[in-house]
Picture 1: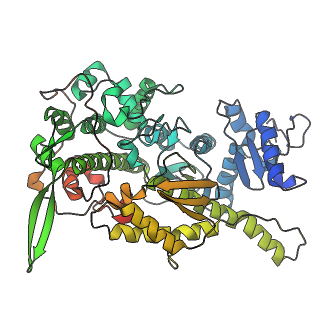
Picture 2 (picture 1 turned 120 degrees about the horizontal axis):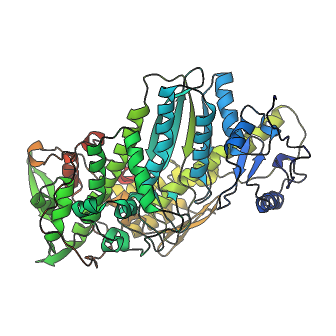
Picture 3 (picture 1 turned 45 degrees about the vertical axis):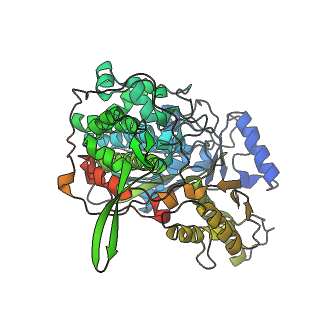
Length: 596
């Protein structure tokens, strides 16, 4: 032990509060577990073990035991030498990887606001501090650590449950040499909440980066980007929530820009990123009015800035927001016809373009991080899965459906690896014990994902495939099919506007699910004519276009998105023009459930 200070979990120099490891509880009941967690929480002990599982209760305040002293205390110590801590879990993984020559993984799950993202950052920070290495390794460590504020800026937002809620899922691999030095990494991201770009619930904010740019940009940048206060922008003013008490948007903008520099983005590339962020904001202020049953842009002045910032010809942008190309085939011949959209369809086209731009910008940043830390061959890795928490909102749509399904699957993994596997081992070894009753949520997973009989996903996919761009009544059709397919199921109910799923973590009511992504956001792959695109070369914004609109925001547009097919491929046609971001595009974006 040397001169290191040790605190054995049974020692007299440690204040005891409840039971450190709940396998030692005299009675394993829900009441006993909750009471033990509460007792420890009230004494500021937020970590508790259940065997190899670490439970963390979010204290919603800064705790004093995440300093260098704790790093030294837990480094190389056995799990039960010190009080439960996330550093103990991280150290255990790191040492097992080196000693056993095996890759390690930690799954962080819990409801929204439970502190999952903070836990993931503590794990990465601890491993960075205890692993060795020279200057090259330090550069990798810096990129890994700086990727957190960057991804949080573009992927996190204030919700009613959490001021810094991750609105995307990520699996982060830290790659190591045989000596245990981190020399690479890889991030996989999924389920970015694209709907947040264009639609907000009361009391919530859009992604942090928008407010960071509006607060942190210099006067010259504000002038050249054409940006003003957040209440001017339709994509931000729907919730009337612009500030968060514990978030300094101006300071975090500087950190975001620094993080982009650390991962290797040039000044021109960083400028391009901010231009696109501002361009999406300006897109949201383009309004439409009806003229002869067709949509026209209400004020063409509002086209100038988004067209300029995104490097798109203003006339081309106007055309693609108010019309779509439709292929007709008969007699072995095909013909492309331009179909003019109505106001509702034009609004949806604008929003679909904004979501696609933002999603691909986010993918570009993830790809930039991966390129900065990638290596040809990995020896070992530690993976950290940080996914959305389980959510129950006042309005629960398709994205919440996906989020909660993922959490349902994570709960199933937890059950398989702990309760079920452990008790099956007792049976095999002939050990006498009192079986522990638990809810096996496989029935809920089957309800959602089963193929035969078809689950909710199959029915939803079928309805999406047969909508034929006609949104009216689609939700009612879905509800009728679900009622006939699900039959009597204690975990499924229907109501007049949707359906109810009894998840392991709560009962969630869903309605209007087909007014969102799965039935509507269909980006069909299409041929792209290079002559019809304006290449977007990253450059400092030195001069703003004429016709800048200042003053009051242009509001008051209808958002009931029940209409049909929109110009998905036409918006795709403009996306490759964004250089250098076009290199990270997907060639195809799926339809149906894949359109998420």
